[in-house]
Structure formats: C-alpha cells, structure tokens
Image 1 (cartoon, each protein chain N blue to C red):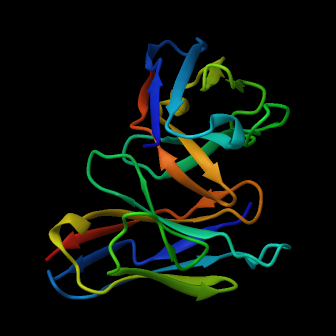
Image 2 (image 1 turned 90 degrees about the vertical axis):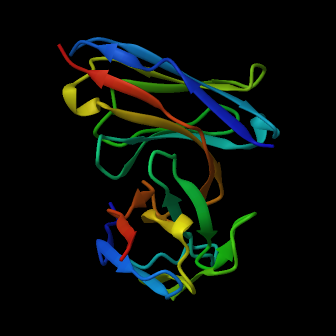
Length: 112
Length: 117
C-alpha cells in the first residue's frame, strides 16, 4: 500500500499568518491516465471530513481561495495564505491513484 | 444539494453483526462509486470498502476482507455495509462517501459503531 507521510503533525499558527502542510508519498502518484490523484481534506472539530483540494491543486466547490495545493510526483503541499479561526482542525492528504486509496496521518492546525 | 445520511450504528458485542445504511440524495446515485471510510476514536481515516456504480464490483482492505460486505440499491439510492465477526478494533465512526474519480468529494455525518462486551 502507498504510505502518505504528512509533516508537521501539529502546526501552531498565528491568525492572519500563512500555514503550510507537506505530504510525501512512498511512490509516484502519477496515474497511467496522466492525472495525479492527490486530494486534501479538512476535518473541523466534531465534524466529518470535507474535501478542499483535488487533483493536486483544484479547489472544490465553496472552498475559499486562501487554500491552495501544489506539488508533483511524490511531494505535495497544502497552503493557507492567511489563517482564520475557522481553519482550526485536522488536515489529511489522500492518494487516489493506486489501490487501495490511502490517507496521511493528519496534521493538527491550531491557533497560537 | 448532495446529502449522505448514515444510520445503523450502535453498541455490539465482539463477534456480533451490524448493518449500516447510507441514504443518498441530490445527485444521480447510479453514476457514482460509493465508499465507506472509518475513523477510530482520536485516530485517522481508513478506507474500508467500495462498490462500483452498478454494484458488480466491490473492494476491501485486508483488515475487513471476509467480514464486511458492501452492497447498494440503485432504486432506493442507498448503500449498505454488512459487518460480521466484529472486533474491538472495528470501533469507529463510519462515514459514507461519494467517489469522483480519484477523490472522495462528499461525506456523510457518520455513524458510530462500538464493539464492546
């Protein structure tokens, strides 16, 4: 199975400042169809996960443009340009290229 | 508006069985692969089953293979997870998700399964 490793596991951030989460996969996530199926999910406290980003850098419907994704091959990044209070929660990367689809272990975003 | 509503969770003894249901609305259900993902208390996300849009193909990780069975009814817009031989480590919130290509775009609120004597 593909292992998705996120860093850091915890990220204290000041409101209004940027935040960045990295995700590294144990194999290339480029699919035979040419797409790279890396997505990012946000889980606010007490809530189910919510899709933020798909195919590395595409924002899902309703996601604020302060969220952005980037990366290639095995290294991917989620960035929040200016952290707001509502961004507190756990962030997961997920790969959907290889079966079974697997998740990173999660990064806790908290406000300093 | 896409909605996924899970039900059927509860407390069950080790070795027991439980059937989860997920009612879908707001989209053409028969066009999508559906999955179940679980989250143990305080832990991360683990995919536990998937079913093709027509229902002719199902997949499971080794951790539940032979014990869990996913099925769907495209007339009722519902997907099910039959869980047998339950173990303490199956205790988790179980989420119904819709899969679009290589990502899971919609998630239900989840239903809690507790396996304990």
